[in-house]
Length: 302
Image (tube, rainbow, N blue to C red; front, side):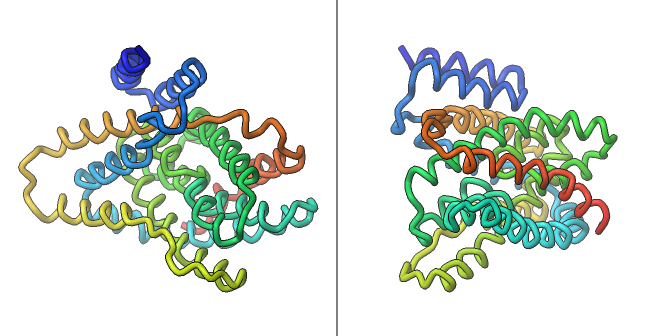
């Protein structure tokens, strides 16, 4: 019976093509049916989302991707370095332990949950700290999908400008895709390209933390789907595809909406029940301060 309701929820998410509806639909579904960790949407949400992103790459013009990267990536790189430093030092100044500060700083500056999960075993983070940090970041992501398109309209940002800002200020790739999809397709193309470029900062971060923590871990996660996304852009731009790009865009949009719904089912409010108040407020304060800073960095340095 649960799969019957799952199909209905997914149909509604795809039919209306509203990202925030998809992710909140996933949250409501998860709360209604108390889905377990092995449930299909929780188990495969990352793969579904990454598949949609790679398909999106087939419809992105290679030259446009290069132009966007050259225009915005230097500013985004400065944002990553300064944000990581600021958020980490803010945590220490609030008397929050170093490991939790590293988790939040990594997630806030690079790629949300992916960054936190990647460095957690290196710094030997407590499971409850990681679970709490992931839950807080997830809630902020959901809020970002809803909030930033309105801010973009209020600030009269163009499609490419909003895509660049979303790729900078929003934590996770899924939320960046959700917010930029709401703003427009060109915005989503820009945002996905720049966000995955930002994700590559995960590599030097892991190396740096491994050295400072004297980790004996030999193998680290590498965001391979970023490489597939780049290859998709190149192949879609330089080789004649058998399928028209409009069809590819529609299919990728459907898969991305399913991915956003699946991400929504991962909500776990219970992880916040016993968390220290300072650890709860710290990521929220960091994000509030990052919002105007990211806007300044992206648009003053471009």
